[in-house]
Length: 184
Image 1 (cartoon, helix red, strand yellow):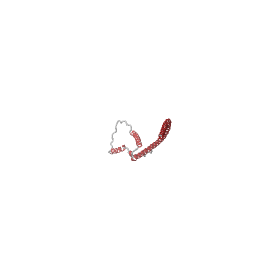
Image 2 (image 1 turned 135 degrees about the vertical axis):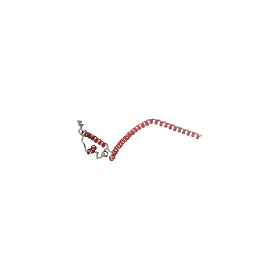
Image 3 (image 1 turned 45 degrees about the vertical axis):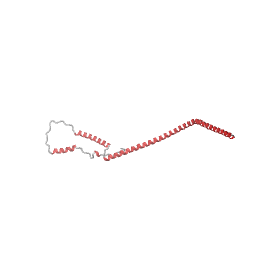
Image 4 (image 1 turned 90 degrees about the vertical axis):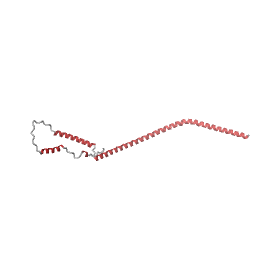
């Protein structure tokens, strides 16, 4: 029986030790929970502050990168437009040379021909006005018709067409060429 009493005291002490240990564990958990609640507000505020700072730094970086990209895009755009202008100029020059080679008159050639035609038309009109004298009043009596030798009509017929036919130009207008002008 003595053994049983000792065992029961040991069991009671052990149970008491376990209870006290469990009690301490429970209290430590409650303390940790209370501490987390207190610290949680502070930690949350600190995280919000750090997040705000991070966001402003990120926005600054994004602004710097977007500025760099826009400058780069502007430079590339200017280079591309310059290249297109050069390409267009080279194309126009080659087309003008090819057209000149095959004898196609240019716009300025046609304009020069129109100017020459206008000038010649004015000269013809002026000469026609001088050549056609004013009509003379009819005489009261007609002179008698003289007999004309037979050779006279033939000479007059041959002379008339030569006077009426205008002299043809040395080169036809379709063969006139102009040298290509630089920059066109």
